[in-house]
Image (cartoon, rainbow, N blue to C red; front, side, top):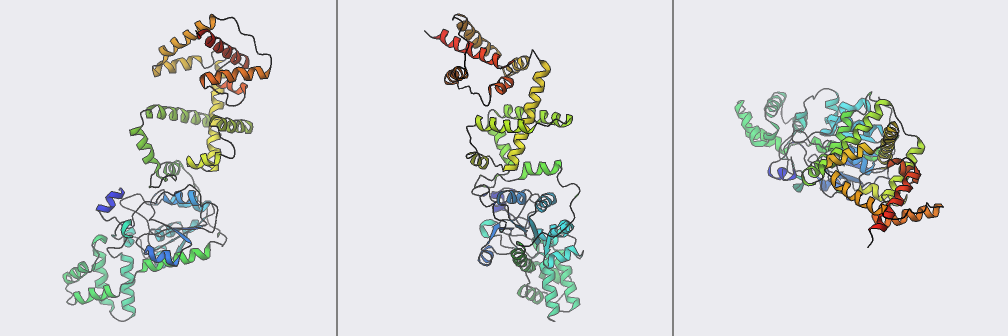
Length: 477
């Protein structure tokens, strides 16, 4: 459901996607940071006044928790409100990944209470009455915390009563002696029989009348006047607890057998938020947009799949690049993009990567390059020539490039043979002249460049550069 949809139709229990941070990972250095996902369980103004040290984010949905942890690296993550029904709920696996990182995760009041009860054995901490009811088995239905509410522009203001608040209100009325057990049971039956989207005073009165309760109007008014917002109380308790928790050492807990799976990776690749946008943009939405608006998407997709197949095959045969190859790949990567060790940090920010993800990317590139060299070595004399020519045929560029190469060959043949460079300086000058003429660059060493481009050796590369220079001379009027 889009943001505009939310403005037209009140969403089910907690709505609103996590907004993308203004800058990527700017807040990722302090373990004192508390990040909390809150919506209708507590009013934003009250929370901002009472907890100015807590970063408040909208109700959580799938991908939001891992996005917040990746961007901000909080010491404590608090789940209070979250979506379900209209959007995918926060997934257990992403919370397990966050717990495994050492971050404390607290749940309360609504979606947080549900997830805390389910993940308590793995270290998630539950706070409040709602959590205790789910953890103890008194409550088992997710719908007990559901309610209808307004959208983010109106502060997720509750429009209906969640059943957990109704039960708390009836307990308070019984404890105070304002109603007896029989009346409490009739009210519970009436409220539980209402869909969460209709659980309001007029509907309670109507249901009680249908049960033959003569004082239905008085009871419904008493209920509204005595309303106990247990979700709010639990939300406040959770944030207070998080404050005290952020300096505590993580308690020992069971570790899941299968922490990361292909489904977990798929969730991260699809549902995580793009951190460099001011609007909530998820990764799958980004790729969908590119697919529909970029004319070269088919080529991008094909290259990405070809790369994926190479990496899958490398994994099948157990190929791993050496540390030297990984270092060389980093040097090549930085040189190709004219980056330095000082400037690469901004590149990572712009491309939504952290240091670990960047290392993994370079490891994959080193693996891919090693597979390429294996393929070239296996063909020995033929090298990459047949593959390149077939690719040009598939792309419809073969005839055009044949004509260009033939013209340059004729121009080169019209010139005297150029002398072979006698020093490294002369080789570098030859490369410089070719770069100025064509933009072509040596990314790392001549040896690696010759291997990557399919030349037999460095001498073969130099010979081709001499031919290119001769063709330029021959083409001059």
